[in-house]
Image (tube, rainbow, N blue to C red; front, side, top):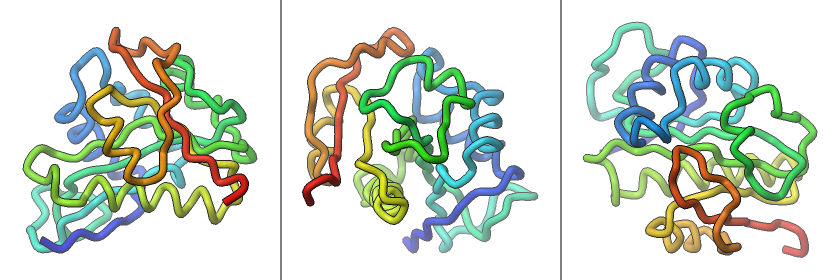
Length: 177
């Protein structure tokens, strides 16, 4: 398995939608319209993981291999994610203090093989290069320990009720590091 992390183009929205719907329950998954808006408004907030050892299954993508995961997020001035951020891509502020992860998706056969780590590392490094204060996200309780491995601190139950789920706020603060 050879994983390459790349930036998607607008032609990759179908691939992103396919991965999103495979990874999140319908109530929690971003709609194709939401993902298309995000990709148009903050394309630099997306990274895709490509298995370059496999032949592409789709025609028209911008990569050579099979997409097996992605991460997306915007820049915001709040240090917590609220539900409106998931719905309204225009809340992205290119000068925002925080990088907010909206979703980290890895297809099932590639889970627990380091793909999610490569994606979150890429997102964190981008936030550092851009001199953000840190990275924020929400996750389910069973994912807290995964994010702790990357330096995120759990902040308790989130006010977000996105998709009717219970979410936990996590923060990776670069200030003072």
